[in-house]
Image 1 (cartoon, rainbow, N blue to C red):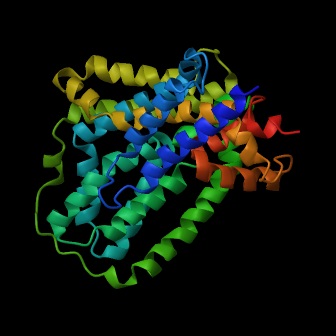
Image 2: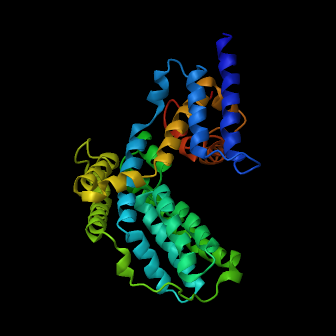
Image 3: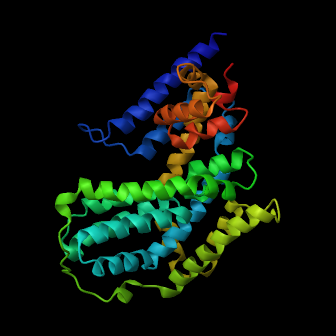
Length: 355
């Protein structure tokens, strides 16, 4: 009986250390990357026996999410390595006469791409591209980075493959035809958010909407360093999107899922990537993968130790739509939205376990 309170206190200490390092990053000499802090928390969760046996930590890692992220990051990496993202960004830069139009295009493009390429993949690939605009046109890229952040966040909501938390909910909830359900219920609010957010961006950065003067004039085609790779990655992406819906509607095979389809697409890229396949693999955002691996273990430790149950008693009961909304909103601030929402979709979740 004494073991449970000990695990409870140990896990509280682990969570304080983990999220404290993340929250205090940049304060004084603290400069620990979030993924490194999360891996430390995962290691402490195992070493201190919060999860017993240790194999429980490995079992807590959702391989569907990890495999999907590796696969979708591979497609995004191929588009980045091929120069397609740089080509696309430069095209919208030189065709925009003012910051207002450029802001709209970055915002709209990032929201659209996040529908299929995951918000993490687009944010990681497009950030350096947008920063490079500072050299090409000597503009303030801060509004564009905000547009990117808002765009990938809003655009990723509408489909299960837009972000890991959506995928978790789609896979674990058992809902029939999740792609159709997400599109029907989440596409309308996504469109509304897009329409509301752009005027807010203009309001926030109303002093930075001056004309654009291109300093570095180039032919956009010069930025496509590997057209074959770009066309191949785009073709795979164009094929995948309708396949998600086709397999969702017709239930062709239990083995054809968004995860296995995306994994197949990624494997084709590595197979036919030629001399760039190593660069593609190297450019995959592995730190985000490590972050999620650590997050699954830390979150499972918080669930097994009783910390999440203790927190849940102070939250509205997730037995109504409003209760689920408020509980998920608040709980996601403690254990991240990746695990906060999906906990309510399984019988092992906190919401289903509260009496």
